[in-house]
Image (cartoon, rainbow, N blue to C red; front, side):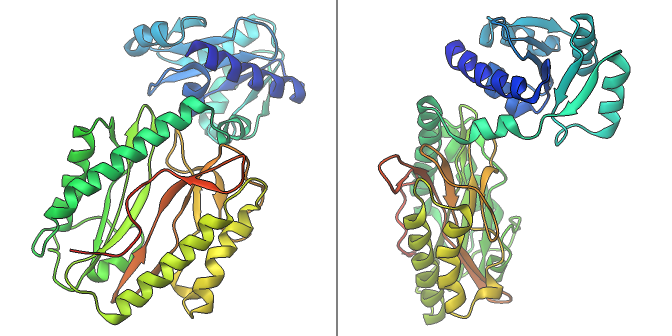
Length: 362
């Protein structure tokens, strides 16, 4: 893996040079991991605009051995207060213009950094590393596919246990436990189980409400595997669904199919959203679908690109995104169907989450 990280750092160095900076201080932890391979809660990378050394990685003693293992080609500084130390290193090495991740760094941290960087001018770097992360390399797609596979298998194993009387919270715990049994590092995010009227709340937190016959149950979950986040949603029926429930489900399924068909290289992010949204709006449910159609996934559960109304930018080959339209009816319930799909060079998208999108009646 060091070769992959070296290649990523070289691409980042080109961006630093284009900015006219001597180096960039990378402090967003997913970006540090992307460029070095080190997963930690306290690490930063000082990456020069040129040179073959790859920069200086700083972390504290808790992660020093992991850093030596995962980033053996980088100079390592073991220090608790990493940002100030790297700022001082930049000044000591004669770097006069250093870019920083302004979207991630607080004003207080930036002031502390400047106090240690005598003679150094800091300039915002923007979300340039996030831009690099948008297009996944084959190894990343393999990890993401594994996370999606674990998620799909976990749901298949838990479905037979869904019955009236089972609390939302218990169902969420069953899914989380099964994902870890199947090899997940942990859940990719807090699992959502929203039953009956709770289904009208897109990000409902599971409660002790028991599932009831006649409920639609929305389950939004995913496995974290090798640092990569799966994200899928299925809505199932407990007992025979009412006519309105089938109608809403069929509408969301139709919108999702249109959204997935719109995912292709060169497609505008806003146009993908519109492909699904227009179907829901035409059915009179515009006010019942107010979140974006989807988002990128990778080292973070929500990352670029964002698929939503007014979003700009075009999709490219090897970009994974979610497609997750929903309709939410206050006081009644809701339906959301979500899959992770990857843009392919040949056109269209490859679906990584394999669970059927037909309405499951349990």
